[in-house]
Length: 67
Image (tube, rainbow, N blue to C red):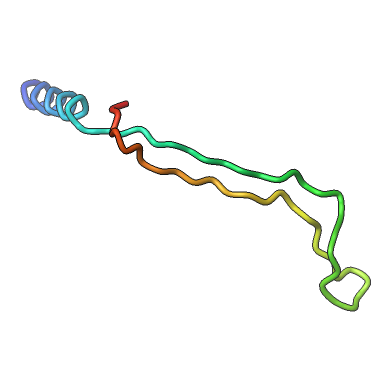
């Protein structure tokens, strides 16, 4: 039982170090939350509050630098 554990843990450790993990470029752009709302109907409570909007984009690096 101990030898199976040693072999499997060694295999997992070696496969972790030899796997290719590449870094990514992250691009983010967000606008601040506005203290305002927009009417969506005729009722007294038919409003939507503005919230923070934006995006996050991740892209693999071309040089494939290992992490």
